[in-house]
Image (cartoon, rainbow, N blue to C red; front, top):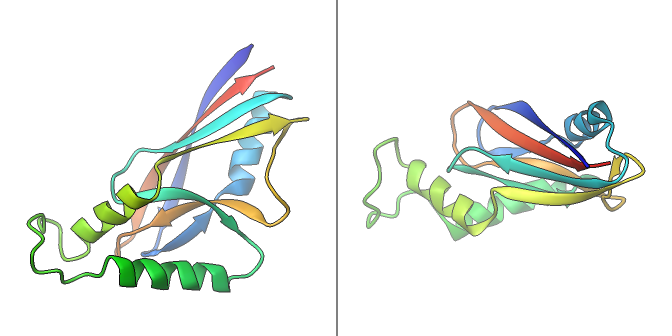
Length: 139
């Protein structure tokens, strides 16, 4: 059994989904793991990770619209507003989604469905540099 850790830096330009499937697959290939598991973990509290459709960009538009309606900015009862009106809503969106994803590796490839991609879901309006840690384990 072998394992390796890779760090991916994903630069964001505001609220959107940023696909990093290719970077993750490149890290798996670099590690030389044929069969195992890759776990992606984002080291932030105002963004999250998703497995989502990567064929139709309308899916991303609808997800962003849904989360904006579900957790809108301007909820005057929020206490944590230190970093602006999008700060606490970003934390709530992150809490409703996930900060880590585990994906099997078979024949040296992450086992994803035909239209699935791995995304960083940025919940803040301003640009950020996000750190995603990949733990790749197998043989």
